[in-house]
Amino acid sequence: MYSKIMLPVDLNEESSWSKALPTALALCRSFDASLHVVTVLPDYQMPIVGSYFPKGFAKKAHEAITQAQHDFIKANVPEDIQVQSVIVDGSPWEAIVKAAKKLEVDLIVMASHNKRKFADYVLGPNAEHVVHHAKISVMIVR
Image (cartoon, rainbow, N blue to C red; front, side, top):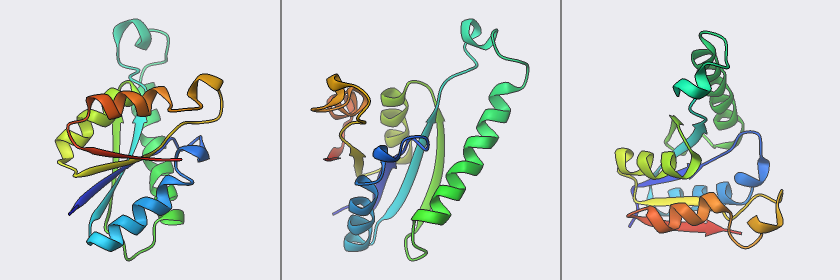
């Protein structure tokens, strides 16, 4: 049923993956699917934003997040799972939807919210936008 499963993660927020990751791994094993771990890096290259950061900041940030994601995968994804590390730039929900389309994934598995704000309690704003804008199935894990 699924051959490619996407798992968006915020490496600074364990609640973005602690419950969703086991679900994604179980689905990967059930369907012999590959896992595509996606981390969104804010877009520092926009002219109005980029002017406030030192030259080369975006490249250094991308390298750091790439290393952090590889460390995350090594620590949390078993070796029997075929996994791809993906770093994308932009707003979280837009970048997730675009990456899902580009990678041609069959399913997005993501956490419902982070516990920072009461407004995020029912369904976080990024998860809500992904559900409404993705053209594929989205599984929200609570």
